[in-house]
Length: 228
View 1: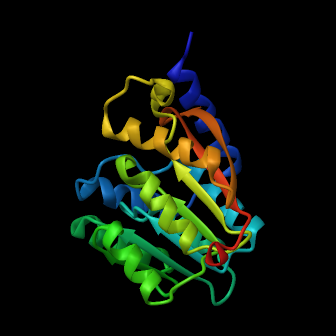
View 2: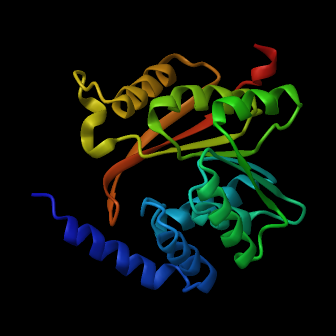
């Protein structure tokens, strides 16, 4: 039988051994909670995974869709090399303001920028303005629009760009063909797109931990979107 208490205990064990205590990261979570933001930031091991992936990719230019309080933003920004840059998109002005304060407290506000507005408005403007290509994209926003976020992310990518999409298993609801919730429809549509999109190769990994039962999709862009 599933044991969420055991999942959390393992997360705590991993965190205590492999995630160095950090006042800025812990402060970001505390400040976000104090400001009334929902407790849905990635876990510490997941945050470190993002940082490790950024370093593996040697990413210099990162796009994040869904800032919340900036916890994941801090993890990725710290993994950037000198002169790296991160742009994070957040629809909620209050969340964005909290995130900006957290980024400043962590000392990464010089490399990480939060832009306020609906991502489906901001992303086309970024394309029109010639921004990108990005080396690494992290999508952690409303799941109903995930397929559209993914499409714009590929447009803003290049061969070798890594795209991570969080919260795609939804406690197993991913396989519920009758599911009518927008977030379930969204993650199923994403997988249907990935099954036939020859621009990318991707897989989805199930996860358990302090955040429950979920998973993430990991994709890499194989073909230059600009030539298709």
